[in-house]
Length: 84
Image 1: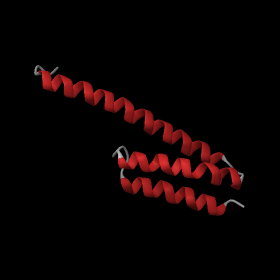
Image 2: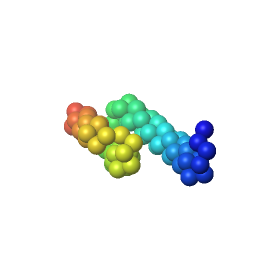
Image 3: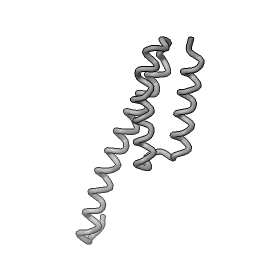
């Protein structure tokens, strides 16, 4: 464990950030999983903007890479086009 007060504080902050990032990441993954199950196009289109917003926020906070965010969003958009 760190001996300096600044390093102790940094350790506490890192732990707090880590828990927060885990929460947002897991919540977004669950939302993506839930939207993939939807078969009704209207319901899919209603929930898609919320999920895309969540993905963008993860990329903005550097929780996921921006290219991964783009990949996820394009996959969801392709799925939307496929639904009849």
